Length: 296
Image (cartoon, rainbow, N blue to C red):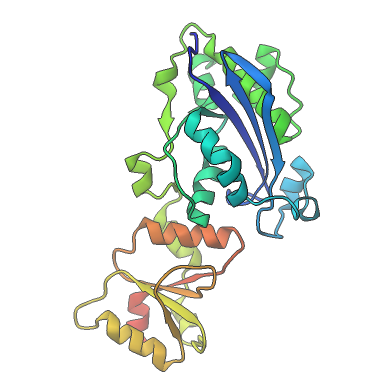
């Protein structure tokens, strides 16, 4: 199938750890008129705003904190380069769960302007067009199409290999661009706040056990109360309890928050933002079920 007049950008991120909010490099290769425009490729190291680097990740891409500490962070990359590129082109990634998640979670974490953009996954395309290729990774697909691919986790060369792979897949007789296109910020994903992790798992991951809460020092700790309480014990009484114990009431989420007191109906927006902040290493927010406070 001819790609027509649509333009594409292939994106590859590398991260400091398994957390999607820690990009350390980005590579972008642009496709115009069915060809890669090497003059418009883009590469940059990224400061992930954390010094926590997973040794497994370092072993893959070779990037350490000292190597990226003076690089622009995601906010600068987004505002100066990436935002306009994703708005004007169809985004190509290999796995949605990795590269698109980096964009989504960093936008959520840093509260950046969102733009509606379309993206396409070469992994999804290949699984449909080439069920005989297993596993269906970049290495196997590039070998199948005779594309040079070193699998060395270098964002610039990986983005070019990804662009080449997409061009080859698009030549398949059964390829249909519009059947694979997805919208990164459609209504459904916005309501889910871009996260796929189960919300109950997030609560359990950061929840303070009641036995520990009994000995918790509230003095000078910050608390955000969110959700509904029972009628006989309104939020105002919860605030009074916390203040009596020396705690400080906050009304928004930031990296300086210590505890979220979660009532009923907390929802995905709050929980996923806490997960993003904690996962980035910027904070260590703990969650206290509201009825725990009532029982203190």
